[in-house]
Length: 237
Image (cartoon, rainbow, N blue to C red; front, top):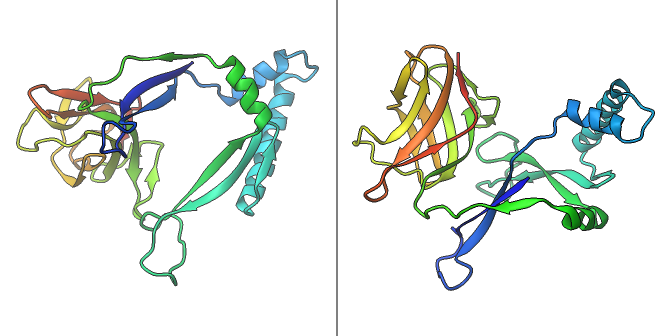
């Protein structure tokens, strides 16, 4: 199901002009195995193994032509590679992973797909957040070239980048900051490369024992402490 929240619009300073916006997320995932099973159940003579084979071929062909810079048509829309980032002058070249030069993907649903989804969409509206409440949107492990790896396995001594909102905290308050926790206890991280409202870069201490940890960010914008968490676990190696 699509879950929708109303949050403060960070791009608008005049509260009388669309001061709030909607953010949404999906409460469930459909993975490749389930997709193959669903295809087999849909009045088809193809087996699950057949469907997995076809999906594998589709993956190979689509990746091949995305890598060639094609706009690839799928049964439900188009997908293409997309370059973003900045550079110091007009002569500079685009280098994926260098600085903020990133290669991503854009998907455009077909009109037919949009119409069909709109007519059947299942969603629910969640209660709005307190506007000052901290939130974590995603976490990535920083690589040497400043790009991010989202498999969330980090070597002790390296840094993790946290994306979110209202992440600012008072580093002198021992109850605020970035924390890692597992069955061995809770560990407050002390070394930061960057501490901003929307992005925090924190170093996993070299002495931290290997294992899986949950991550949280604790802030106190007023008189109340807020704890932002993520469903993903950090694996320290």
